[in-house]
Image 1 (cartoon, each protein chain N blue to C red):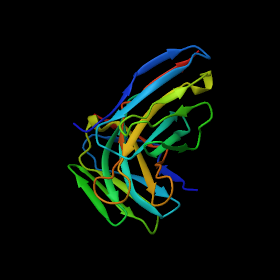
Image 2 (image 1 turned 90 degrees about the vertical axis):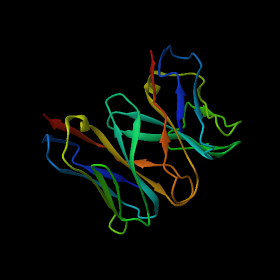
Image 3 (image 1 turned 135 degrees about the vertical axis):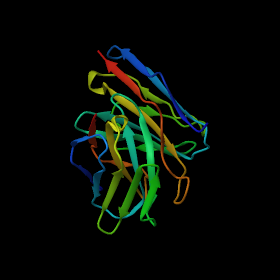
Length: 113
Length: 115
């Protein structure tokens, strides 16, 4: 059974700093890994999708990497801003059977102005 | 605009009163699913559908029903809601298979309270 872990559960950093969020998964048989952002009580906004054959993806100040063999992904946020404060979730999609997403429990990020 | 639309966004109901949460997508996706999100438990899949008339149970299907009569719609039915179904619900859709364009899209969420 796939398990996804995100560490730390919460993180506070001053505005302007670069930061890294971590995601690890136990089963490397995945199609892709997706990073989401969720504001309190709101929906999920997709940030980046990395296919299993890719090593990284970039969108603006965000860069996500994937090391499938070691079961790890990181989300790098450059020059953090208060508007980046949210919960960040990673989810993996298996390459067999029910293609459900298995989510981590998230990292709650607070950017201090 | 590509989107998944859920309705209603907020719902308060009483125990035992049947309700339906609608979900519609405009991307011609084969795969649709429902998740619930609870504090400390994260997002868990309730039901999924790999195409029209093809549905199956996810991890937490008890107390829920779904149907997939049309490709774009995937309603979630609670025939006799109970307080333990109070949660934040998300509908999602994606193309099947691997490759570009297979990211999952999520609806805005439905916050359900059962009293």
